[in-house]
Length: 622
Image 1: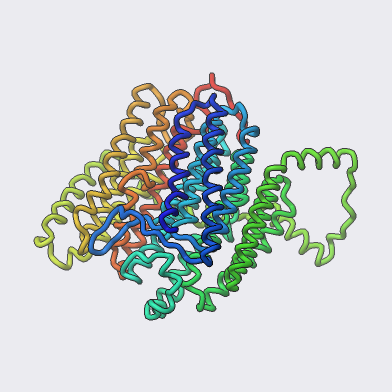
Image 2 (image 1 turned 60 degrees about the vertical axis):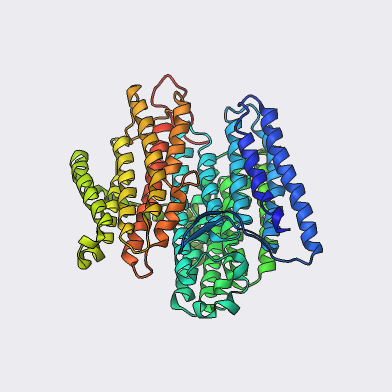
């Protein structure tokens, strides 16, 4: 049976490749490709599940191809099938099939019809990589794919301001979750001294009892996984991104944020449950987080004027209850609750336009004035206070900006006093000196060599902060992102057992895609276009091919699985020693800021309302 598992990833991958060839006007061919792929996947899933049940529900593990291997690190594509995979796989394929059929008519004659189905199949590939993943590396591949697909679909109406702005907000938190996942994988590598598979997790207590008793395993690793799960499933205090993600088409909102993508945090908790099944303190934390989220999200959903926002927060509240079920160890109930919530929210979002139209008509002819409520009493004031807080969504969006992103922007602005030319003159000699010391470590005193990783990492972090806050020139910001990657690799190169082949693997994608991105920006500048980052320019109107090329370069530079840099990021973190906390924090923050800076550049240069006034000016929101 294990030899059939690759089909569940290969079928969506082939469908994604085939969907790239039809034009936007060939709607029947695009839809036919998508529905054939998803239908074939559904039949394969049904047949495999029936065979799996007939054999007595065994855990099926497939050892896939190894992308990279050395004495200390193995990066392989492993697949796994158990009852968690079965439930998530069946729900995903059924809902994707239904939404695809609905989208054929809903998206008919949209100028982005092809883009929509391309992104839908990209998302479907990512979700299957997660569901059928057999280790954390494979799961991370799918995690990255659905993050990028989310950005594309939220910014689907790319000529409007708010969809692009909200896409950047969502991808900012997704990037935080991505690097959190990398840090959790790094800690697991140090704990087990290898890449552990989900098949091995089922016997964790028997084979790795000594590791589980370690203090890091007791709380730190589970807490990092919980942070990643909370961001992905929009739990407190990260709940505000979910209604912002509803700027995309209603069908994508249904499949992404109502049913599947938003439940990936629950999937991660279920997969990592063996890490903390006997840790009662952590279980209490999970239950408390789910309980608080369900209470706050329920209050917010009951007073919102937008039907999509109501459904979004209702889904968040139910996921909070599922978190409580997982914390209590009720796996079967959590899976059943997930399936019910996914089907319900998909249905609600798909019929929401019709229901909204009916309710507006009914209210017009049968208006009932609100009953008199004495708000001067104590409970009346409490009720009014909760009402105002819920209408403002407890100011969660503002809190995220004030306590998470604004401090980073302020620190980045401290370094804006250094002119770009001076920065270039300073950085290249320092990098050349560092490169010389890497190749001649025997000439560097031990006391100095011990501090060099943090020093070079800090220089790279300053470059990343400058790129994150750059408002004038996209070329300068792009250069600073490349500089950060170079200094990050230089800082890790001083650690023992980190070979030059691994540095070259990481930098191969950086150099190639960095050069491609520079060429795109230079081409825009030659054409007389503005590439400042102080506003949205919308150059994808007049330069669509250049937009696609720059997008690919941005994905490659940020570590998306289209270049060796993706494997290099895992290698970089894997070779940071377990006691190098400062270097770990610097490297993680650099990777976060790099991704945000690259996505921000792409959005500012190519998306949003076009700066030339002879183009149509769209509404701010969809």
